[in-house]
Length: 178
Image (tube, rainbow, N blue to C red; front, top):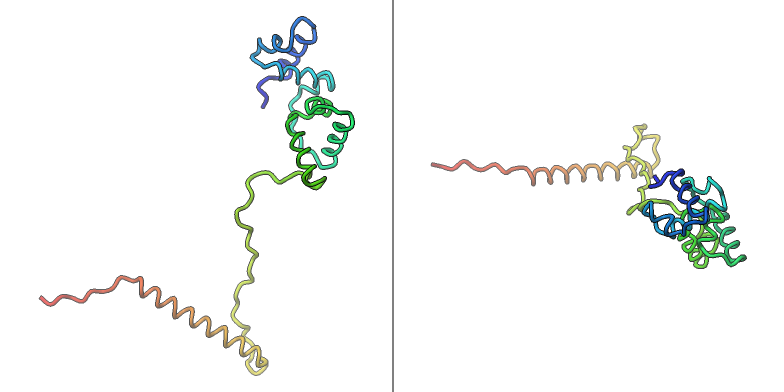
C-alpha cells in the first residue's frame, strides 16, 4: 500500500502547480524528495487523477516493445516514458531495454515469479504389480519368464530386508555363568 493517499498526493501536486513553490519545497512539508514530487506532477499532468492512483500491472511483451519503440522514436527519457504510459517504476524500462537488446521480443515476455524449483517434479512411476493370475497354460514363454524374473526379484528383496532387520535388531547376550 502507498504511504500517501490519493488526496495527499493531489494536494502536494496542486501546491507545486499553483506556481508558488518548487518541487523541493512542495514535498518538504510532507517529507518527500523533489524527484517523487516531479514524478507525481508528470503523472497528474499526463493522466489526471488516475495517474495518482496505485497501480500494479503486469505487461505483455507486445506492450513493452511498443513502449520501447515510442521511447526510442521520440528520444524520451525513462521518466518521461513512464509518465506517458502511466508506468509506476521508470527504472523497469532500463531492464526492459537491456533484455530486449540481449534476447529480442522473447526476452520481454513475463517471467514466472518466485524462486525456481531446485529439482523438477518426478514423473509418476507406474506401480509395480504382480503378474496377472492367469492360467499358466495360456501364457506364452516370454510371459512366464517375466513372471519368474519378477518373483525372483521379490524373493531377493524380502531376503535382503530380513537380513537388514536382523542386523539392526539388538543382539541377545548370553547369560553369564556365575
